[in-house]
Length: 173
Image (cartoon, rainbow, N blue to C red; front, side, top):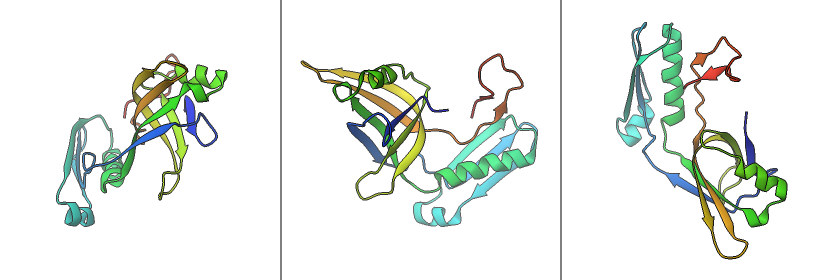
């Protein structure tokens, strides 16, 4: 579950960093589990527009061919087209309530956060992200910015734990 919500209905956002890049563009996904055959999934439309961009994942730990295929399909669906991606957001502690400041300062690297906002000329973003970095900018006076570096939360969870000893039931992606 999400540690905190930023944007509409949550902690106000001061600024966002958006990027469009082909860094996360893959239109052919090759997967192989130690227990299954190699699976190759292609998106011909994406390959025609952007050229072949392959991603290979081998030595996966799936028990079935269906799981290996589902993994490949999920990656292909997620990364077959370049998308504008939210890379960072900044909040200014000056603009927050005491409770919101406490919430912001307790966010840690690896936490899942929800971001809800509408960029100019685009549809509303209402997604979960993984916090990959945190930076503080302090200035004279009441200005104190906190910038969170974000990446989209993986939608693929592959390990189900059969224990309650770790306070989580999923691990890995």
